[in-house]
Length: 288
Image (cartoon, rainbow, N blue to C red; front, side):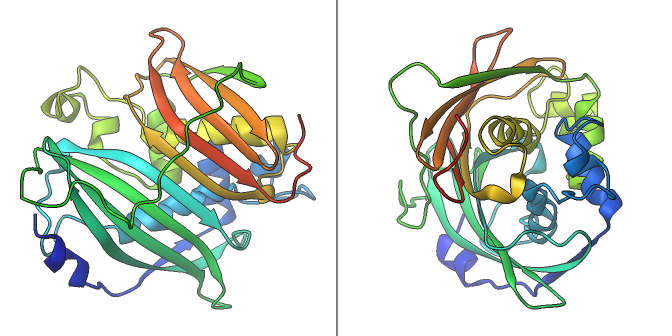
């Protein structure tokens, strides 16, 4: 890894096109039901794009495989952390433009944590829609003599030391990753190809981290924003353990003004799979 070389590289902007159908498919991929008309039915008065759909154009632009200064191995790459900030609701369809840069590469010894900053704007209006910071962990990429921390990193926040204000359980279908990969366009074979998953050290394909985060974010929106995902202002999460397909996700939530802290566990194993996570909502009138 060569952080200084990586930070100097500036690839050209990427244009991402999508339709209402893509937005609905993504919503179904994070567990939205047919009764969630605001995400599943284009003629509903409150229909809107679920904001974490911005991960789709972000992934398209975040091509680390041929990035100068980055040693990349797809079979040993993990999504470590994710930050999303929404400035404007996503258009129902159209084209968005993503610009990406590597903010830093942190030497974690056992691997390298690659911090990628992505800005997304509406191609038609030029309005800035979202900013994302993706922390990608390259297993085996550490010990290159780099810094152990970075001021560029957006850090998570531990939940309050009290019982959750709200807990939601939801079982994940064995087929969830097959559906999510279509809506998110995250076609990493780790999530569908058994042989590829075994190459990565897993017994079988696992759920996308952003799919489990999508489920948890939807739980927060349904619990504290009356099902209106347009109220989402920002989101931060750390992925701590893989999720097996067919697992039951348990999202524990704590309300503190307009910030909803949360963590997610797998019911069957008790393992925490998302922590130091929060959703910031617009305004202070989030529902308890």
